[in-house]
Structures are given as C-alpha cells and as structure tokens.
Length: 198
Image 1 (cartoon, rainbow, N blue to C red):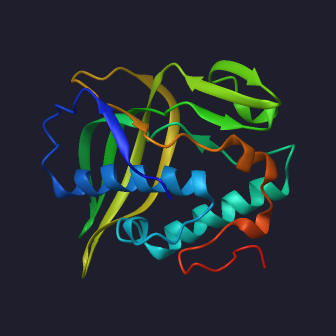
Image 2: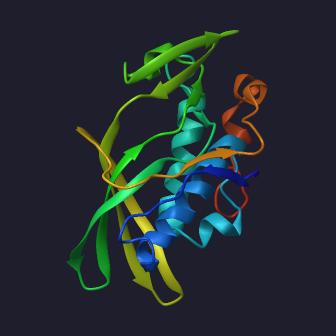
Image 3: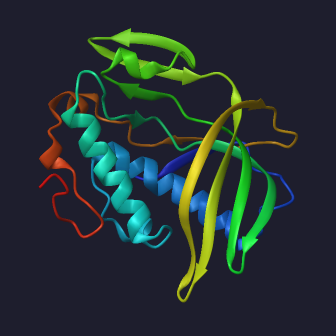
C-alpha cells in the first residue's frame, strides 16, 4: 500500500480536533490506498475500521473485478475531501459523522460504472471520473475497547457546499492503472492477509 498523501490547503472546520473525526480522516486515507493495492490487510486500515467493515470492502472489490467489464474495481488519485457538518449521537458509543464530501478522481474500466457523476476522460480503455459536486455523506463510528473505529458509511445524491476550507489530498504514488487491467479476484487480500475470493 502507498498511503502517503500530499495535501493542498487545510481543513478548518470546528470538529477537526474531535477523535471521531480524526479516525474518519485516517480511515479514508487508508481505505482508498487499500483499494489501489487490492490489499486490505495493512494495520493502518484495520486500526481505523472494524474487521467486518474492512472485509466488506475487500469482498466488494473482488466482486467488482469478477464482474468486469460490466463492473470494475476503482483506483483513486487521492482520498475524499470533506468538511464535517455535524456529529450525531445514534446510541451509546455510536455516532454518525455527517460530511459534505467530494471524491478524488478515480479510474475504472467499466464505462457503465461512471454513474454520470462527473467529468469523464478515456485513456487506453480506462476511464477517469472527476466528481464535480460535493454531496452529503456520513460515516458511522463506534468506540470500542481499543479506540474509535469506522463501522459503516453511505453517500446520498444530495448536493452540498462546504462552508469552511477543505484540504485536497493526492497520493504521492499514483494508482497503477496497469494493475487495474490485470486484476483477478484472487489478487484481493482481506484484513487477515488471505484471499477473499475463495
């Protein structure tokens, strides 16, 4: 995994010092780097999300690869950029972190996977999609014995606009589009480092 990020700007919202927000910020960096490597076993990821959440991501990636070219795995030029708008208590030790978020540009092999959600560019059979709008997104976090973990997340189609400065991150190692072309489901590794396509 290559999870080193170069940031442009900084996040200036009022929730930035909150540990629930900090774990979400670390999670999105590690999760999208894991997508780029088809490897979800790095402790930096498994220390920010529950095992079930990480395994679900790994299985989804293997499934997308298996269904290619109807579907395709995605590779990301960076993690999402977002402003936290609210932290909502769901129940004891479980919270929803509401954000106004824009995904980083991503690469896919399935043109049907573009959802018409942004600027599309084709290059040698791969498609780069640049999301132009911010939309509402939420991450659920829970406090476990060893700290906060992301447990789930979901995006709406509701557009929004950040009211504070939002940092934009780019991975210092770009995604390997050739790996996307060569992908097979058995290349995907789960949180235990083992194949998930078995």
